[in-house]
Length: 416
Image (cartoon, rainbow, N blue to C red; front, side):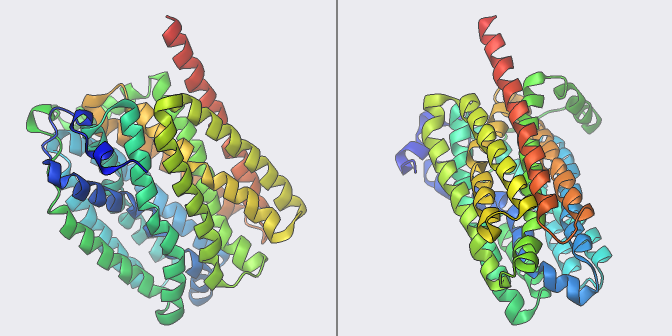
């Protein structure tokens, strides 16, 4: 992991960054927490999904749609928060988002049907995504190029503690107090994050904010979509995220229901993947300056594709049983460190004055694609891991093709 001197070096900060030297580690800690809201909002209750299905009288596919509902709110909400933050700064939109997250979490905790939970999860996600998308924009406010990719990798590695502990703690909370208590814990975490936000300085000075109406900001999204590099980077991350959310939606039932893994041990299997994510993010932070974002992104997506194909074969044939499913899943998930940070930083690299909008657009595309991954697993659920396996294989292949588009486009630009 980079040393404190490396992370806080003044020459890596944008000239307009208004953050005193002594506060930078505090800012990094808050940003890590904000980025973690996407994970904790889902990972906490994964082990309790079979119990939720039983208590609410729903089938596995219906409960899996609570993840799809979250992704709908998470993807669409980012477009709104990104445009708002480029006009009014970063702090106020995050604060409003955290309030919505708390309200949505309360709604989930008191729901009496899966349909109610899905609706409240949409509101919860709209609030949660403000912290995620704007923490990435704050990084771009402060850092540039490969350094931004390095910082995103460091933040992702730090915030990965949340999804590492989430399923483990979630399973224990559900065992002691029931699945509703998990959402009450999320309420508490949202309030704590809101308190921490009060100590975060504004990173977008007034002179760098957009003055156009918000309608113009939304038109800017359409303009950004005409850039092949943004499409390539966003597409690589989007297909990968689709596979990731197929994994998130499918593994509770694949492990607990199909392979009879006790719910209390699900967190250990899930946590192994998070450890892989932490390791590859730390490796990426070390290597990105040496090899470049594009080469690492391309290599990571190819490895994800190979892992996905092996997973599809094993899940269809049941080769290797639980281990035949777990090992290729572990390989696929671990590649996150080589794909996510580089795809986001690459998309934002050429648009410093629109960092909020680009971050929001890329995030909306990526998490929106998760709707397809989790939705397909839910719609095609047949009691076996096979739907999850083939969805991951197809999406990983799409990520590799998009990474190839980025690499070829960048090569042509250098030649010209």
